[in-house]
Length: 393
Image (cartoon, helix red, strand yellow):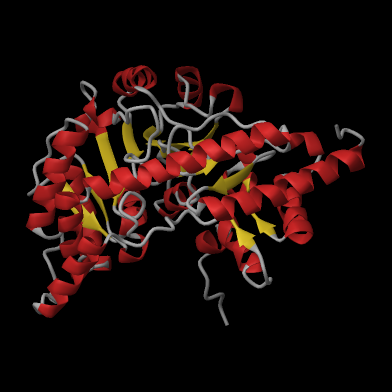
């Protein structure tokens, strides 16, 4: 028999996050700080709207682009939050999570051999989606000393005459890094001068601490060359509702809609009705959850200082990315050893690209009580390693 499998698909590595947590899930009494999922329930008024839509029999397909009522609310949200105006009829598409938007955005824009610049460490889907679209992924290795921000020099060095898209993954998963206006202005200038499009993944836009989120789409000359991706999973604790969206130039959105039409038809109708209520009435919920995340973030930074574990201060998302290079172990070795020794699961930094080696990702989308117990275990483990290596205090 001929080989039934696609060589391209076989060549793509499975998610390092899932591989690790499939192993961790089989162990008893494990505290897991690895999943990037809010520990809050979806706010009741949002759930109630979803329930009401079912009771009213709203179980039909929506248009391929999504409910116009939802697209109108996204337009209003974008206008008040990032000060960019989008046409709900032609410049917005509702997708099955932000991940689908990444996938169909790549496929709508890429011809074979085009290059996609992907700063790493970053979300695990960008590189596989670029490969699936027949692009050549070009990795830009971000640096801890720059707080994992993309610098103009790094961008310029990575570009070629085949570069078409820059992925801009901020606020960043896994590092918690952000890009401020002054950072983005320099990146925007390079993109305009070199005719590069930007795929700006802003799924964590509502989760910044002491810093205002700035979208590159809001800068002069950038709306027309930016696909802005967002969704409801992180800010509104709606992960299982599987709802995202993309905003961008109408010609690109039209082709994304074509792919979405043939592959998906439309995003879940119940989720769309719930999302309308989230955007109309959910600002106070987002603020409440953001304040709680910030308390947890502050606690983790304090805990790392106490145990002498270096970690730059993140101002976005709900992750910290402490450095474990002092122990002479790979991030996978550290994570598996920590799991064996203390029943504590974290994600190896290498799961997010080679430049994540020497770090671990810890999510603080967990209760403060669980985080305190987990930090006790991590502190004990770190102290044991230092005594073993002769570097303990």
